[in-house]
Length: 523
Image (cartoon, rainbow, N blue to C red; front, side, top):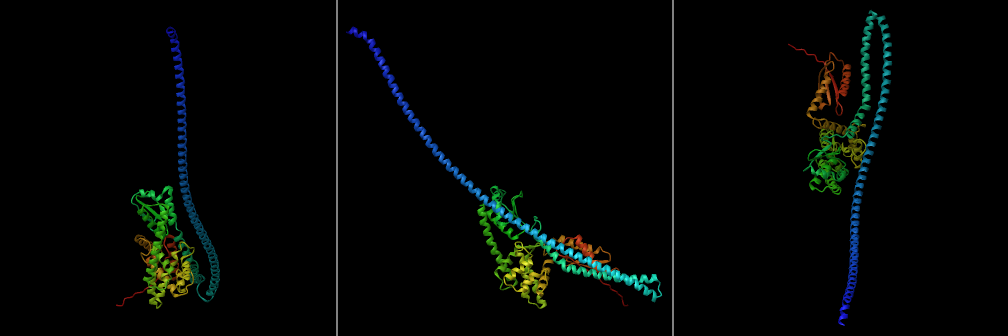
């Protein structure tokens, strides 16, 4: 038994080993399958977590993209509105300029037609002069024959005497006729044409950088310029659209320039920009808010200025709207002269003249104070400032005498009351006194010297001097070299040479004085 056991023992060991190997293989296979299942399960969990995280990230990115898209769309719509507003403003300005140019062309065409009509009249008158000369020639021939019959003079002597007499008479007649023609033409055309040209020059002059058109704003540093301009220029566009001025940001250190012919708008822009720079918050919404606030403050200041002017002049029962328009004249200039100061000065001058003439000085002050009221809105309303002013005064129930003074103080129509003439005189005195309008002393003296030099350059002139701030030239001629008819011709030639060689505002009166004095000394 034991021997048989020992014989089977190797086989038993081999079998046990085989069974052990099989069991180990099966166990390892079982353990491997479980590990693989666990790994697959874990892999699926990781994949699911990754998918969930990806979905979450995707939703966050979608929300962020939608937010960015909404913000971009809002900015685009805002900039589009600003651009559309700017384009509409520019279109309105272009339409206004086009209308002004069309009106100017119509006025020039009308003036050209008037000049053509006057030229035809002059040609007719010239033909009449030629016919008169022919008549004079026939009279001369007839007088020659009579002289030959009744006198003992020779034909040649009689001829010379007759020609001399007729030449002198024809020359006097021609001078009288020329003076009459000039007076008629000047009365009908010169004053109106000069007024139209001066008004057009004042209101439609090309823009230039000068004290009357620009204001310079100091900045704490050049860095603020970028904030004034804004992203893609939206701040500067919003500022220009709100104020109606041109804002110039250039290389000038720590400064920007505001340009506009409208002094009221330029003052609003200046104050608003200074406040925005101090505040530091510069964006379209804030710009519009500050500009509106400044406009309200200036409207109150305008009302106060008008009230003070009415009080200074001593008027009563003045319509509130007229007081407001009077205050706006503080921000209006004419040839460099402040219109509100000019109106008050004219009122005081008119009152003094009226008192000396025995007229109502209070009514004269009222008419003179409101004579330029149309200039408060003539940059916004079509028409001349006398016409605009008369319409405004009628609208607010002013006396017809005051209305006529405003309408006719430049003598555009027939003068109906003495207060109109009085207002025109006071207006001229206030406007033409030295220093009233923008002019340097050097230019003023140079103009006076040029006037006197031109007048003295003519033959027969003894002395020439300018008076009334260069508005009139007095020319004293030598009586032995210049006759009365020659004096008239000389005045016309001097005036013509002044027109050709000098530039000036208004008109220059040339007065030729011919005076002969004889002196003897009693011993």
